[in-house]
Length: 392
Ligand code: SF4
Ligand code: SF4
Image (cartoon, rainbow, N blue to C red):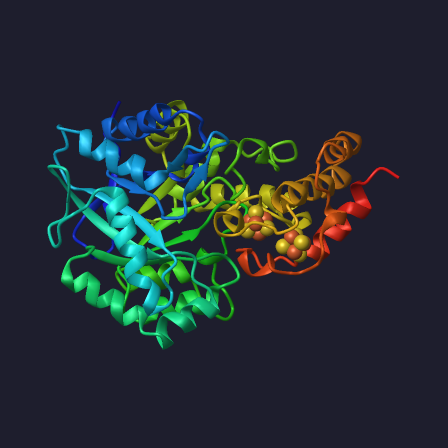
């Protein structure tokens, strides 16, 4: 396969492949070897950035713990053919100074990094980019007031990691802009796709955030390139109602020159190979991008304020009433789409009837709300979903 094109990785001096590997979904596989083969294949293809996080873990029913960081570390450790340092992104929740060292040290251990400065995994040189995971107004406040941000800067200087970054989501534009302008960060990771491109639009209040980051010399990693709802098998919510191909979703992102790399979250080698193949296609013109945006708009508008089934909330939180609320809320989104575009509502109601802990078991404790990256009022949405989907 042809070499993947490379782009500047902000002002780090590194060149990054414009397609990179998102290792979040590898935890959802049943076979550890399969997960590692995907990472091996990414390296074989020449991909030089892998995106993981402390939170990307899953405990299997038989007690096995699948940890994305461990898989990444193990594979790099095994390789004897790497001719350049692989860039590894990992992320932690140490927003308070007292928690920061615990998170970074655990991530380094899990990845198998034991030295400082010119970092290595086994015999291989790596570049470690350490992220504050998913910053919001409250977390940013904690990072500043408790000194976590200053501590992170110090740890970077001490060589615990090479570059500092953060990730965030839509709805946190104010904080993202402030963080970009703070001068602390080398790399950021934000969602961007044909359905939701706000971070690269000329926002009335905040301007074009991608342009701002780019002009500040910060590398931009594009997450959720496929719509922010491709995290689990069952979540291709838009596909029945929207004719934008997976290839065009990727090309749309790759056509944005502010982006350093598109993080393709893969679970299968075939997906990764296809993404790399697509990256060799000619990028889209401004007009072609606008046309895709128009087509995306029709599903976008009806699914505002619905769950994206991103499962980010479940990384850190479990409902005390045992309700799998993203699963239920995904059915709500499907219902909204089916209603608007004459889809099969009975099938959706049937799926809801098979769920054991239904929305009416929600105690409205509201503990889940703070974990939703999209600021959804979850118990209110659950109540509405039950009214719509429960068979009377
Ligand atoms: S509000 Fe409902 S869904 Fe959310 S944590 Fe409480 S019981 Fe669970
Ligand atoms: S509730 Fe929020 S964080 Fe959780 S899956 Fe839905 S959109 Fe994602």
